[in-house]
Image (cartoon, rainbow, N blue to C red; front, side, top):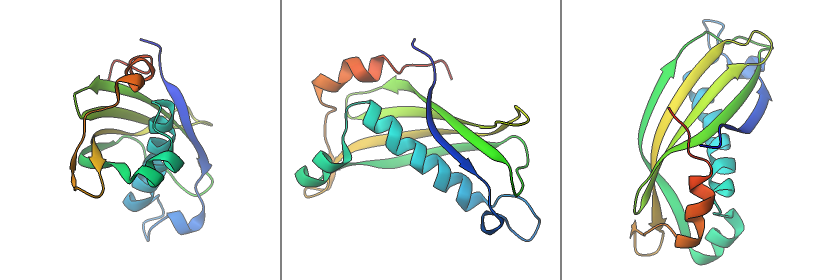
Amino acid sequence: MAGWTETFRGTIYPWHCDHMGHMNVMYYIHFFDQAAGHLLSACGYKWAEMGEQRLGFVDVKHVIEYKAEQVVGSLLAIESGIVKRGRTSLVGMHRMTNTETGALAATLEVTTIHFDLEARKSLPLREDTWPLIDALLVEP
């Protein structure tokens, strides 16, 4: 197990927050989705190539846990890893941390399927990506 890989860094701005003064749920997902793009790229799936080939990944399950409230000005980092590699799917884990306080802000476990965008069906993960994926395995 190689450990966690940083996949996102950002700052919470006022428009990320709701009427209660903390970051809104849709922005947690927004930041985790950006991190997922970097994680899949580290797994060997380059976005430009997938677009040309009409391939992608489709999330089929999200399990999110909110751990500590985040407010305007909070500095965030997300570390990501792969929990499991299946035949057509990956289970990824993302940990969002407030870099100033060290507090774990939220976690997301996501199951995503390698997908043929034309045929609208799952595809096996490419064998040449297996070593890259396995190098990103982490304990959840």
